[in-house]
Picture 1 (tube, helix red, strand yellow):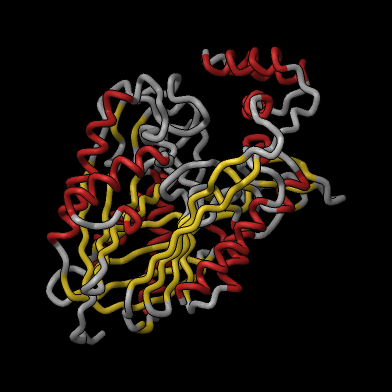
Picture 2 (cartoon, helix red, strand yellow):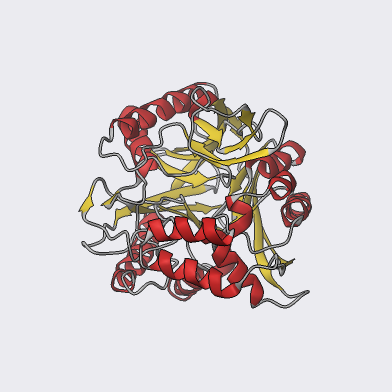
Length: 445
């Protein structure tokens, strides 16, 4: 790889911000019953600064479940005021890690940790800007094969069976609802005088070390992958989560103590990264272009004739951490899950025709395009965008600048299930957003 003179530069910063004992962990809908006990490995906030000489963009990657719109507004406003980078050029992508504090949540147990989170985000931005160095961009990709899979299953007759954490070889069901997008996309910024920066974009839930009974803080497989990559290749590593709404790792460890699968998954992913790095092509680093757009998404309002008092009873049992009562009440009252009960309560408060802005954004860098989605996109929708994108490589960066939760694909809404139960927006929203993102990519090409 040869270095050429240009105005394009890249900087990198990372800090570990582990929480104290007793902080509520994200994931599974409740931060009051899963309180941190020990730190298995560091959770980090990472910032990559991209500059074309005129415009600077900050791309955060944080080892958390998600960030709220308020999180984004606080951090981007600070960046604009203190670093003179417009808020519209700040992107905060969460890895969707289920073993870290849920900073997007207002849970009482998490509030004491928030100053640590914000201070870390400010400090890491300064580190990235101080680290700027001329860079040349190379791109590559490789297939992860069966390291991720769609967790939604169909029966032999094509009807929906449900959601489960079964690997492809161990599934008792006929088949997965769809094939997982197993393409790992990689950007390598070869810098003139400093360590290279490698950006990885893949799509898979970060749930290897998760479980309702696990209370150890961890960056999960993203941390294990990062450690392996930096050790073998001597680079800085940043992970940007893709369209992972329906996709999980084949290394899931439900409530287990052993972490051997975590280490193995990191090594397996690093082997795929090695393939991608071995066959890369240069890309001209042209002007960085950024575009934002708000799409008004309509809410679901159908409560399916459910009894709201029964729904509240289920949610109260879940808040108490009484999982046995949740299961029994759901069976008795005809709810799919506590998420279903919560969604029914939410829909009961929504008016027909009312919705909310979904903050969309896209970025172009030469022949590389990126979209930023504030929700859990299904990989099928992500693959549609990549297949129809005008760019040679298109990164789908979900869980960015907000956390609306799931927006399933059309087939997901048709079949129903947990993700549909938990979704706020109406059927068809996912496909509408696909078309909107493609329009944004065309505009910045």
